[in-house]
Length: 111
Image 1: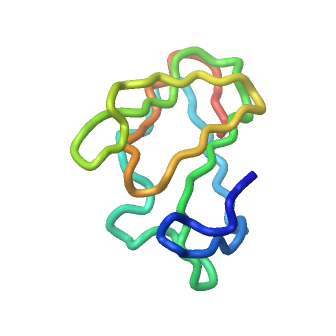
Image 2: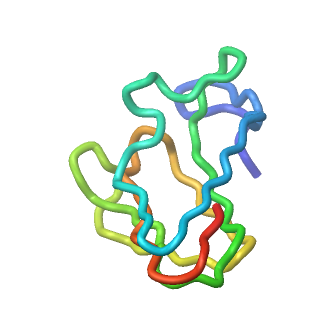
């Protein structure tokens, strides 16, 4: 269950209406980055996104792990390579989790 209020007293506004579907083929990757950093976060109707949800739509590919990385400003203490099954989701806070996508070596990945 998601709490109605964040630790700093802000209220949750709901789930954003904008979804991004990404397609990766062999050789493609996503460089390490922080979501929402530098732009003040993703905003919709005056609400700022607090979390990113990655839904794994396929799993019949090789390589392409989601990487959670330590680094300056990252809440991650050790490197993690996540390779979930189709239908699983990964959730992380925006602006404080350094992450990226390893190069795909075979197949097509949709998230």
